[in-house]
Amino acid sequence: MTIYPEEVEYEPPPQSACENLVIPIDLTDELKLQTVQYIYRGLVVRFAIMLYYVSPEGLISEISRIDTCHGTVHRHRFTQGSKEELGDPQIIHRILVDGSEWEVVNSHYDQHLDQMIDEAEEYFRRWKR
Image (cartoon, rainbow, N blue to C red):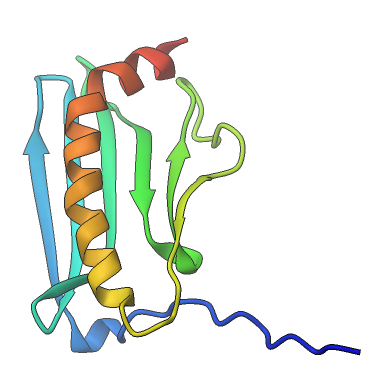
C-alpha cells in the first residue's frame, strides 16, 4: 500500500509582515478596478483584483474578481442584480509550495491585472446578460 503525502496549500506570509497596497483605477465612468496587494520582500505574495460597475445612481456592483485565496489563483464571476457568484470560481493556477511560490504569485499579479483591464468591457457585457 502506497501512502501519498497530503498536498500542502500555499499560505502567504502573515499580513502583519507585508506592506498592504490598495490601488483604485478608473477605467471608464462606470467601470472601476481596485487592486489589493500584499508585498513581502519586494514581491506581491497575495492579491485581489476586483472589477466593479458603478451605476448612475452610485450603486456599486462587483463584476469579477481574481485573487489568490485558498492556494490558487482563481477568478470569481458575479451576476447583475445579485451578489451571488456565477458558479464555482475558475481555477487559473494552483500555487505549488516548491520554493518558487512568491515569484509565481508576483508574476500572476501583473499578468491578471493586464487581463482584467484588457477584458473589462467583455466581462461587463457578460455580467449584464
